[in-house]
Image 1 (cartoon, rainbow, N blue to C red):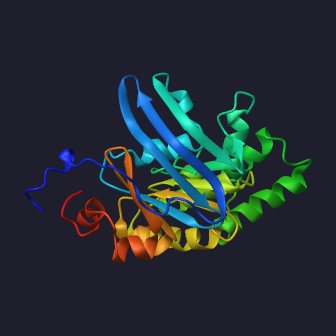
Image 2: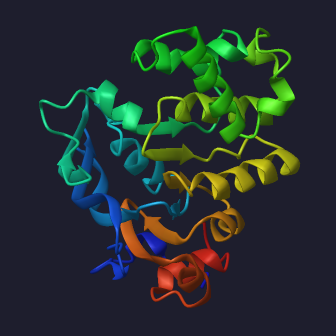
Length: 272
């Protein structure tokens, strides 16, 4: 459809099921503005408990902006204004009496580029437990560090060098270290913003296997440019275009029987 001017397409409704049977987090009528520019338009969807939801779409379509709303990372941007309803277990995450720091312990985030602290492997993982006072002594902290590294599939590779700097690890290991750091504070939701885009295929495969294991305990939302990755790791997929949610549903349905022409054009490579 080379003759189709995508920017001229008007989205009159969202296609597909936006509501999960057992939602961990629910978003209704979300609008996001950067100053006078609207980045997200009236988005409503659910994150199903203990499942992976993939957010896909062309660059600049609002995926990462929307993801950052889910743990109030956009609070750090002065010109950003967010409206709508965001609830975690029916609790308003934008309530004035809710501490964003405590929210981010419940809704952790893994970024596109691995960002280990300039500390030891041990101290990277122990950081959150220390600042939130989650342990009472060194033995408990040791257990948190070991358990988190095991859950991140990294412990056996680093158990003999926990005092070494985290920045000395390979890219894939650094990303798993960041995942271990995230889960060390026992979050309920993990947000991932293109967690494998900077990694080689082998490291990417390890991260994808890890995501599949983590969903047994955590609810996961992942932004990805790779439709193959979305198909491999997610149970639900949401397709964004120009800040709007075009279509959401079960991943298998989105990739085999998309209901919206925009979705079909994107997943078949006609644009994006």
